[in-house]
Length: 203
Image 1 (cartoon, helix red, strand yellow):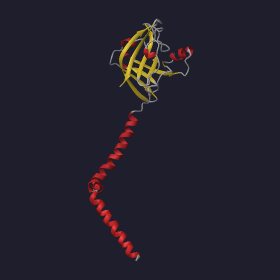
Image 2 (tube, helix red, strand yellow):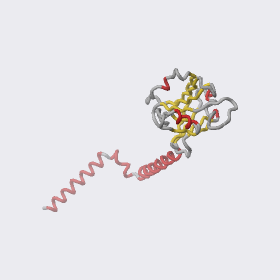
Image 3 (cartoon, rainbow, N blue to C red):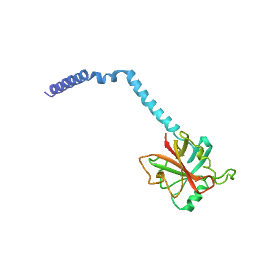
């Protein structure tokens, strides 16, 4: 009796499997096609290699820094957790300063970077003249930021000259919905009367 039941089970299972294959043949027939299997395995490993290559290509062995090819700027980006004026001044002797109250380059929002400007023939010490030629930037010029071994490229879209006491909307509260890079320096070079701001957006 038990043997009959086992045979009956086997019969029904066989019928079920055959029916399943017939009904779903269009969806599963690729399983029996070695070319499809081979292609899928190849795609899997190729995708893995592509992702690894992409990771390697997107890694840059560079310190945190700013580059502006059009005006020959290359300078380290200095960070400070303090808003103390003395700390700001010390940081600006070592490069350009990323304002601690604003977004980092890998975050959404406004990234604010300050740098000194100096009059012509000023001694090239302490990055005093790093942003002296910012006014030469025009719409479409590129600014490159390297941060944590990643490259962020921005494109200039506007510039403004303003009095420090008046302020500007790009110095107000950080807008996390609007990614933006703002470079600021004293204007004219070597004077503390006004500020020049270069506005750029990520590309």
